[in-house]
Length: 474
Image (tube, rainbow, N blue to C red):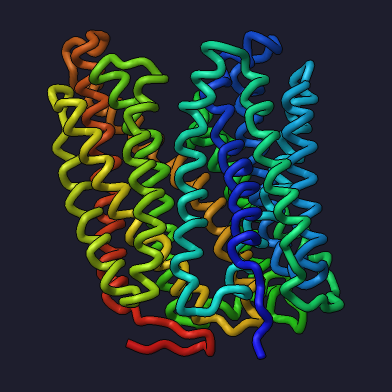
């Protein structure tokens, strides 16, 4: 007889803590300028509060497949929430940049453990026919929390101070920890694992260099011509190639056999595609709204909030639709919506109404909500139970890496489009011409991600419903 779990309480505890972690990932983005003044630091130093967080996640994620097998569910939950809680508290009382940076690393370690633990626990405690709904709730947290982070942080900075960003999060963490300690059970068996230290070094150097290199390329003053960026990316690629070859042993750090399952590969590609589209949109649209419509940073961020709310709500619904009808009837309509909206985005001009842009963003995020949870659940469903930890680790690792890559590439395409337009302009310093240049760059970004969506649509046609025996069916 299959073991019964209090699935609602377990999921609630994981989601509450996950919300805090994802909120923290973007919450300081809007506070960078304020923190530069408070701590008397320059922009490059302040950017480390975000880059360091992403870098820690990128380094830690590949190890989680092994950690999920070496430690019990409760041990990892307590370790992850302790990291989040201590890090959040230290951030709230930080008196200098170094203390805040250390707090951010602790937060990232906690989130790096919690994310794969969340996915793995859902795979174990929910039967395949109910996983879509549960993954929809996770999707709500993963998309909604980072979207509202800048908006809520902006209000707190305006009316209180940056410290209150973290004081605001602490009560949620305490509630999540209490739920988890009371209801979360050990859902996996602990196995003795041998750590391949060469794989660990290659993984750290590879993923760390890639994330840092692309993040630095996307920062102001960085760029692809930077020797540091080029060196980091080359080192990262070489280390990852060696890492892949090294995984052909009895106890790999990251079991790459997950890529032998076709529905896993298709699902991961579609999730990566969604990540790139979301990250690109979150960067380009606020810049377009500020330059073209003359809105403030705070108001431009608020304009994206309706789409994020719709995305979170629909992710829960689309998860249930996946459980009932399978992936194709959910994913394909989502891909069609995304392709059409991205095409409309390529036609935007400075004269386009703000209402139209907000409406298009809402429809786009609705389409993403149809694709993401169904693709993710279908991908993990095809894996046999012994590969659940590694499937979760691979998925979360690639999400962090593609997030850094997508952000940097989007900024690069935007900048190149603007520079090309201004190079042919007779009055490149006029506000109207700068707005037109921003439009040209934004159209290039949306055109690029539209091509990616078309590729995703073609690949999505081959998707089939997965079961948990390493097979698939129509």
